[in-house]
Amino acid sequence: MTTTTPLAPKAGRLPGGRRRFTAARPAAGFVAAALVLFAVAPLALSDFRLGLLAKYLCTAIVAVGICLAWGRGGLLTLGQGVFFGLGGYAMAMHLKIADAGPGHVPDFMQLYGTATELPWWWRPFANPVFAIAATVLLPMAVAAILGSFIFRRRVKGAYFAILSQALAAAFAIWLVGQQATTGGTNGLTDIQGFFGYDLNDPVNQRMVYFVIAAVLLLLIALARQLMHSRYGELLVAVRDSEERVRFLGYDPANVKLVAYVVAAGMAGLAGALFVPAVGIISPALVGIVPSIELVIGAAVGGRASLTGAVLGAIGVAWARTALSEEFPAAWTYFQGLLFIVALAFLPGGLASLAAIVKRRRRNQGLSGDTA
Amino acid sequence: MTDFTDSAGLEIRELRVTFDGFTAVDGVDLDVRPGDLRFLIGPNGAGKTTLVDAVTGLVRATGSVRFAGADLLGRSVHRIARSGIGRTFQTAAVFEELTVLQNLDIAAGAGRGALTMLRRRRGVPESVARALETVGLTGLADSPAGTLAHGQKQWLEIGMLLVQDVRLLLLDEPVAGMSQDERQATGELLQRISGERTVVVIEHDMDFMRSFARSVSVLHAGRVLSEGTVAEVQADPRVQEVYLGHTRTEDTSAAVPGPTAVQEA
Image (cartoon, rainbow over the protein chains, first blue to last red):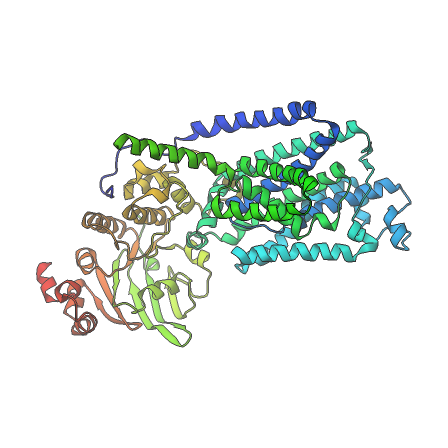
């Protein structure tokens, strides 16, 4: 055991001097990601494939939030579908109203309901500013209310995950039940325009892709800033030892709440962007299964690493499309297996693989030297 | 140095903690003067840790606990911490994945505003640098706390209490598992810290207690059995009885704060 006695402080390098590494590399990574998203992908991919990528990037945006809340905060957010859905529906409601035009109600309402005018809670969404703000603020408000109950009652671990799942299920079931106002099982479909732009036009589809890519990069930068701030350090401390943090005079409930609310806002924005990219939002996209899928990407890629979580989310979403076309029945099993394998054998995800290999190699090198 | 009024002392009256009918702390009265280095000793199950748990808000208790003029019972853990009371645990509880510096910076920051929290830490806050120096971890500031040796983790914890700027430190067996040199260093550290702050140490190591305690309280079966200086407590026949009763099979000269020890000291 090394003994540094409290009486004789060891002379050494001054603390806090390791920022040299942390500044340059992520900046280079960021530029590379921007190049791929804004130059390589639009040139290399067909309109159809680019549209799919736009959809995958939406899952990646959710993964940025999951990385913060789960990876750094230890909150297994198995119900992000709720926030994704709130953002998606908020956006879709506005687009449906705009599609219908003034004085008309959206098509499905004429079909299912006898309604000749908008339900009262639809009306504010006719205002584009309100709708856009609501895609982010509504999920954040819901998360704030839920979170303050959940965290003050010290619900954590598996109980938190199960509660999140239950909420996702409840939300999906509620949506299905309100057929006259939410479109029921079908959801809000066949969205034509996006703030005056025709979504059937490939040029406009590209524009949507660029917006999504830009938002993703922006949120990655935001999450990175949060993770490297004092708050980010505190969040990791809460994840690792909540009780200890309490004895330092912090209320861990507030610390977790911030991460949960930010993650919800990101999921909401992702849902809002998903709608023009894919043209639909439905209960099948917000319930238990999609909520789990959103988490799997982050788990496989590496939940504590932004790069890992984002690439994992894109990768798993891509694999889902590729494999479920070939083996539609097997995909669900494969996905479940992937989740279990990642959590059991590689808790840090693929992002931790490099570090593990490096450590192995170094250990081997050391034992080789001594032999 | 701070001006010491009676307000930074700990005053416990009729403290009672009951778990499912079992009374762990049974009417404890305890006064710790400001700047004291008080040792709480007693056989296993005497209620020492439970007493600290009650003071820090971890378990429910009845009676009264006053510190710096404020009643603590019924307050939440983090509010009690903010009123200037810090504690450590039997097993070191540092944030293993964070560096020594980050651990200390978090401990220093409970009063920080939202804007400071959302910015990066630049450089080393002065209180953190001072605490690093005091506990001798300056050279290890950038090491992950998980890689520290056991004794160093305990020092880090004490350092965290220092930057937290608590006026009362409650330490639960801080030298358990430490080497003789480390014990000596820790004891001297505690002596330096006390005076400026009030320190209460739960300890089983009688040699350590004899070397460093300024005053001692002996707990037995949830009550204060004896109180005073080391010599006074060791001379108390009730204390000898309790310790003999519990350590009959052991080498009594080591485990009992008996007369032989007085001669040694």
